[in-house]
Amino acid sequence: MTTPPPPIHNALLTIPRTASNLLVRILNLENQPSILRHPSDGYLFLSTMRFKGENDMHSRFYSAWTPSERSGMNDVFASCVADWMRLVEDAEAQRKGTCVKEHVNWMVRPDVEDAVVEEGYVGNPICIPDAFLRDKLRLTLLIRHPALVVPSLLRSALDNEGLEVVMEEGAEERMRREVSYRWHVALYEMLANERYSSREEDVKYPIVLDAADLGNEVLMKKYAGAIGLNPRFFRFVWDAESAEGKNKVDARMRDTLLASKGIVVEKLSGNEDFDLERLDDEWRQEFVLYDRTADPLLATLTQRP
Image 1 (cartoon, helix red, strand yellow):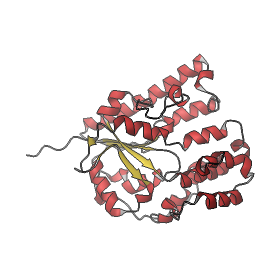
Image 2 (cartoon, rainbow, N blue to C red):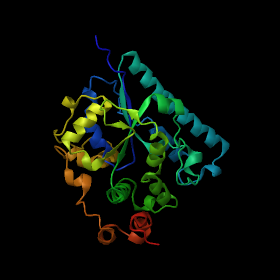
Image 3 (cartoon, helix red, strand yellow):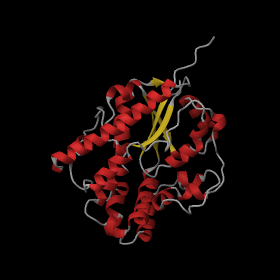
Image 4 (cartoon, rainbow, N blue to C red):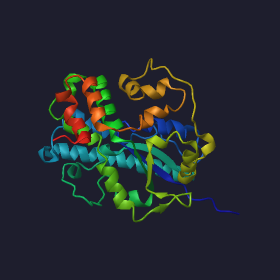
């Protein structure tokens, strides 16, 4: 009798506006028999952002936090990690794996986030203990072209928070951190030498998945096999949903997905012509008070001094 392979505990690490909600929709986690599904498919570290917001900590460096703020933040991180470990333990008791999505910037250790991370940094930048990260979790790093991510984040911020909030002191730096792939790179470099095996012989963890490829059914089915999910349950078409009755912010963040009946390929890859000078002209026409709201953030793409 063949011994079944051990369960896989997949961590889909993202940043905002990388089509991660679409990825979860495709994976169809609620119908995957090999996993114990988390009720929210992840977002275990959402409380870290709430704690920062409630205590006005987003715009202040870690060195400026009070002892009670540092202690409180540590307690929140510890609670989030404990919840994740408990999910894995419960799944293994049922001989199942897990698959959760997390925004990596919600998990970054505050002392590391504020430090100048030199090129080649290979330490663990997130609050997940090394042993749990290396021994239990298998990472997929979801990416999307920054020329799509950055303006999308700014649009959603303007819609959800309003112009006044977007123009507040510290808002630009907060959004810069949200769209940085620094932590993807740090985690990849930390784990790249170990190259954990997946269920596909030629695919190793950590896996880098480009949002532009989410519409490629052949590739996505191979990805399913690699991470221990059943591709027969993957969804590439579905019924459109109404945003009525949904949380305003959640509906805005999922507006394309809610209105669609399948994968909107052009939303994933744009027009594939990332002429930044031309795009900069388009953004200048699109964004109100461009020089004060969009220019500082988008300058990271156009490389203007």
